[in-house]
Image: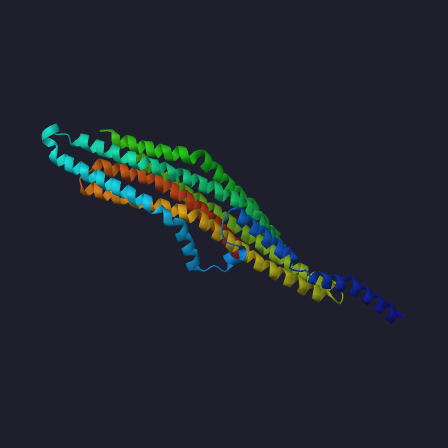
Amino acid sequence: MRKLVIIIIVTILLMLFALPLNAHAEDDSAPQNEAISQFDDVLYEYDVGFSSDELSGISFSGLVNRIAEKTSDISEAPLRLLGTILLIAVITSVLKSFGGGILGNSERLYSSVCTITAVTAIVPPLFNIFSQTLDTVKLSGRFIAVYIPIFSGITAACGNIGSAGVYDISLLAGSELIVQIVNSMLMPILSAVTMLSVAGGAASKTNFSGAVQLMKKLITWGLTISMTLFTGFLTLKCTVAAKADGAATKTARFLISGLVPVVGGAVSDAYATVRSSFDIVRGTVGAGGCIVIILMILPPVLHILAYRAVLWTGAAAADIFGEEQMSGVLKSLDSGLAIAQSVLICYGVMFILCTAILMQTVR
């Protein structure tokens, strides 16, 4: 009689545990496919041009070619601007050589006219770049706000609930804070830098280059320190949370394997298999998100770098032709571009580092 009771109990347990596992195994890829589908919808919404499968299999040369396609149409405008600056410097130098007899000792007048003419050609594309920087930060912020819940949800499905919560709250808050600060303060700061540069070049006895350089250093150093502290804080929190999640996962698997009769080991192995499949999805989505941010931020950064190269070359040419006033203005205007470039780089690097840290610390 005792043996019959044991057989009945074992049969009931098998029906309760084994059959649901087999039924679930038939469609165990549904949650993973749903996560990938959501990520593909986000990629389509932001017109990335790649699916999640294509992003996961993209090579470095393919990524470079894609970035080259986005930056191929931005080389003409900087070259035209460089030609304009060089032409202004040459004409001013010639007028200085032949105009002494007409206007007397008027080198300062020629330099002022040269500087104002150069500024007239440079400032319009400069403000277009500043607007593009602001739009890029806003677009990246909207993408991050949609992407982070998806990535955090996949991370939580892997059993790392604490790490996912830290990443979700911290990075969402940091991204939103940066977007709000940039939206309210970037254009006024860049406009102030540009106006001080122009005023310093137009005035004969006033030089604002020191103030411009001070603003540049304060902002770039502030961005660097803030990004370093935030990344370090998130790394520490994610590491601690990952250790706690790992201990909880091992404890859960041990309890399932030891306390569930007969099928405990099968349930534990099934959980490990499902978690491994979610790890693959998490790696795909994480790498895809980083590549999308690179595709969003790197083209504007290269665009700014092209214009900075124009200003560097124009300043060197102005020094050669003896146009120190024009050279100083070009160097000051470069400070505004450097600030805009620093904002984009710090924002992109912060997201990529934080995502990579979560992918590496969570196992």
